[in-house]
Length: 320
Image (cartoon, rainbow, N blue to C red; front, side, top):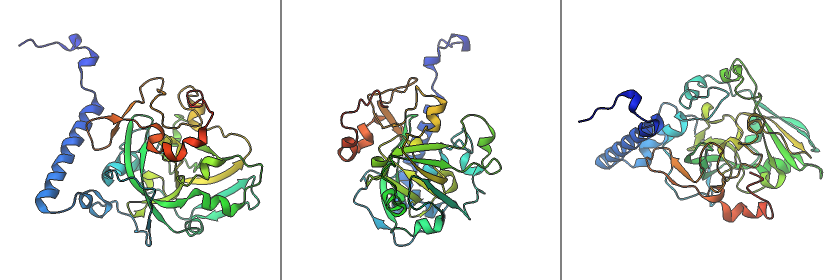
């Protein structure tokens, strides 16, 4: 047998670390499924918060939403241990540990800009604005991985209507907490802090846009955006701002953080579009966490029937 020396092996012949780890996840998932079948325990019971030490306070009175997908929910442990949260770390597996003592109480959200009712709202006041509902959404990361999560919250439009935006308000700008002591990732200049994201008013008012404070029937874990974040399921994940402390209504398009960092790679709209590649990789396929094989990426992340009309007449390759 011919044994190649290290210097003779091309990089294309080496199994990537991410692929190797995903294969291990796939095999581990199969083992869990086998245990569930053998013991008579449902797979969802194996992978939900009730079986982990991370479980938060349960949220009572949650309504099921007809907007939910019927796809298989991603295991809770995957969603809470594989996080893009640069305020804590650029590594996917570190935010869970680094955010465990993150303080989410007391917490206020400043509402200002072009609204009649400027105010500083306590997060508990916000949570009481509308009944909590569970929405099982697909969530797609620009890096090529995806998840399906039962988020808990209520339509972002409920908050918008209560603060009465003026007729000049065309956009919402979301700002994440800036706290060097609590968020060690902000001590590094990998991005411009604090983190800022934005939506057009019609996007923010769309029924799918969710003001989110829980998942899997419980309060959001710190590493997943507690105590308050948004979920915009037809856009790449970085559009869904976490740990929100300010919502500003403006007549000008916000300059979002990733667009500042790499304007040719991350546009303002960031709609999931398999036909527009990231400059450094294809967006045509995605890998669901916990699975080994890739699947085709869906236009608007599969929500085209609901949201495509928002972009009629727009060049989605130019307005990426």
